[in-house]
Amino acid sequence: VTWAAYHSESERLAGQAELAAHSGHENDAIDQYRKAAEAEERALQVLSPDKQRTFGITAVSAASLWLMAREYNRAEQIAYNCLSSRRLPEFATAQLRELLQDVWSEQVRANSPIKFLRGDLVVSVSGGQVVYGGAPLDLILRKVGEIRALIFRTVELKLGIALRKGRPAEEVVQQYFQPWLFQQPAGSYQFAVRVRQPEQTELFAEQMPEVETVAATALDILRASVDDPQGELQTLIPDQDYRTTFLTIARNLAPTGTSFEQLRIGSKVASAAPVVLLPSARETINQALRNSKTDRSGELEPVVGVQIRGILRGLSLNRDWLEVTTTDAEGKSQSLRIYDAGETLDDIIGPMVNHAVIVDAFRDRERDRLHLRDIQPAE
Amino acid sequence: VVFEIDDGAAKEHISISWEPADQRARDAWANRDDATRDAAYLMVIAATERRHRMYAVRRVQVGGRADYYVAPVGVSADDLEACTRLEISGVDGGGRSAVSQRLTQKIEQVSRGANFPAMAGVIGFAARTILLRQVQDPQEAT
Image (cartoon, each protein chain N blue to C red):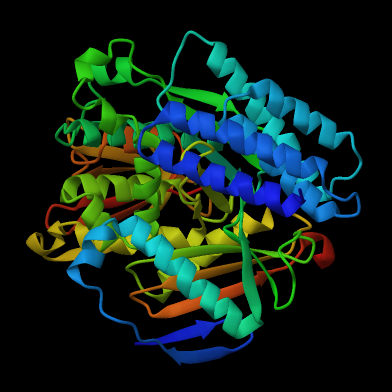
């Protein structure tokens, strides 16, 4: 029997596994993945030693299939064997090393008494000041806060909770759908977030099938925010306030190109392709936000549009204002109070406190007041 | 319907016609994401054949970071030594900028395969555009 015959058999079985997984038949899917891994391992054994690229592809495939079959020891074993064989091309060596880290993470999670919802969000920040495996702490803290907001908002959307303003997520949501941070193999700077499974699922019994896919939904929302905010995003989120909230989260996640140049969000478990946010995404989403927001400037003639760059030093959303400190060319500081901030969502503006921001506002000349149109991180 | 194929070196306008789907077909393919993905496979593979004379040989298995292996005509499917990875994506709505944005994502995705030749192809159904790019091996670039 040839490599092609075994590999084709493995492809067929993996296809069946995917179908079973798609239909929610988890045990059948695991069984088919195991059979597919066995066939791929046989393909590897009969392969001629001179077929280096085919060997690399098949080795990665076999180890990945054992991982999908949750046979972590077999995945680890085949990865070690192939890595020590000196037959692997460079791309396969790198992929198998990454895969080993996934295997170890999955092993730890499988043995842990704490269970997590299906799917994860793997966030990778690169370019600018970010180096291999390291990044400015402030930047990563802010990104973690933004991902936290994305997850809670997605859970609330899926639970059918009305858009929350001026208060944190309900305690029951925070308690039962805790996001957890996991380290990832170095590669730019990466971290993963998974949502802990509620211990008492009966509280959300009806909504659990929906909430199970929170990671995949969050990815779909981000993709639609970048690709087609006027079309696909409207189909995914008919409610305009929710849509504006997710657009703002996606815009804030995107780089400006100074401290970092790219943010990539994918999932090692969900099959969806990753979403890559570049500086151009920020402008696309800003345009969509401008189209979606009600502009009050027309009610307050005469007005002058202004853009303010400074540090967000304070805010009181209940009192409807925020304060930004600006510094002029001579180093002189000035504190500006900007009104109409009450509609700003606290989990979105929270990560910006004490950081550089860009505020779009308009000045009501009659009352000499600044009114908020939009605020976004400046890094 | 006229689509533009842009492979980075040249642009070509091609006319595509098809039998309108009947209700039975619409019901069978009533999942928008699946329909977009499968139509993208069809169109991008056809565009790759036309522009690069490369033909789909096999699907990429799990962990392979692409969708299909393509190879020049005459290359057998007995191994993958002469294959190039092809990553495919479809954008249902949105203009050309949305298609370009998705292409950037796909190029980034296949670039992580280091020294393994790759191509990325994205079709925008509303934009009537197919963008194809060969991804340079980062090692060759240095």
